[in-house]
Amino acid sequence: PVTHPAHPDHRPAGPDTTSSDSPAKSASPKPEPPSPREREERAARERESYEREIHRLRSELAQIQTEHSANARTLERSAQAAEMERADRHAKHCLAAWNTEETSLLQQQVDSLRVIHEKSKDEAAEARRKDEVAHAQRLKEVKIADTQMLEEDKRTLQQELEEARRDNHALRQESANARAELHMHKDQWFDRARPEDQKRIDELEDEVKKLTRVKEGLENARADMQKHNTKLVAESEDSKRESKQLRDQQEAHGEEVAALKEKVKQLEEREGGKSTDSGLGSEFYFGERVYTCMIDKPGVGYRNSPDFGDKNTDGSGPVSGQSVLADAICQGPKAVFIRDSRNQLWLPVTNPAGNVCCMSHVGRVDLLTEEVKAGLNMNQGRDKLSDPAFN
Image 1: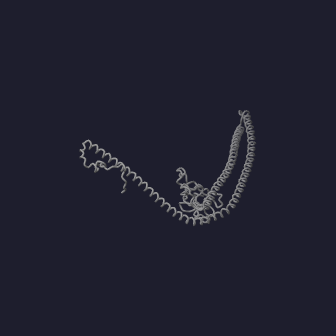
Image 2 (image 1 turned 90 degrees about the vertical axis):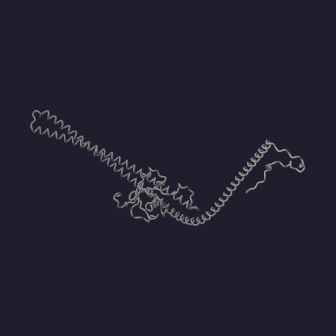
Image 3 (image 1 turned 135 degrees about the vertical axis):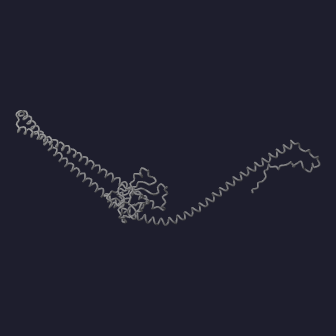
């Protein structure tokens, strides 16, 4: 219980004895008893005094409760702060011990990655330069061969067209002569024609019909030649477009390879620090992600581990257009690998030189739209080497 000093204005209830009961006036006559009105007024004053005292005590009680709550909250915050400080010291101690060991391991891995990166950088640049030169030479040779073939076909078609025109002119002349001769014979011998003459007339008419059919055949041949020439021109245009698409695809692959190299560089820089904690949010966690194969038949083969030499020979790897669901990613000795959640086997993201993209990243599963998910062609693990559907 809390005791409080009496209020200075507080007076105990009851009759006032400060002056009326003094010994000097003890011999005075006894006062008259108060009237009922005075008693009511005195009782009203006492009730008012009691109410004021009760209100004051309630105010003091509320103030004491407020102070008590504030003190309790202060003590609770102090206890929480002390507990957090102890937990922080313990976490720092554990983190320091863990970081010492992890830093040593990461430093060894980073040193190995740097050696591999420096060694493969020159090889990749040289291989890329050779590939570009060879590709440009192939495109040049294909273009020259197409041009020569088109020129030769054009000359052949022109020669055939000229011959067809000459034959057509000769046939027209012969047909005109035959018609003139026929009409002349008809006019001269119709009335006096003998069976031999009628037979000759029939032969001439048959010959005219044959010549007409030959003419029609030549016209059809000419139309076919024109169609063939148009087809050759269209094929030449298609070849040019395919060459441009190959160049664009090569540039796109080069950009994707550059992006992958930048990711590897960022990974190396991150692993070169003193902590493996990136400080990023959950949206950057790997989780489960979809990758699509970019290599035509026979596609990309599985590996038992993130190493090109540790190949799985069951022939069930994905081909171009097929996708897999990856649940892990790992930097192997020569390339980055992803793990297929279906069979826990590994697939390379690029080739060892890093200039060809094998598996293209589509996105994290929980961030893909239903339309994208519906359009995925997931790899079911069928043997592409022996299945007739893939041959």
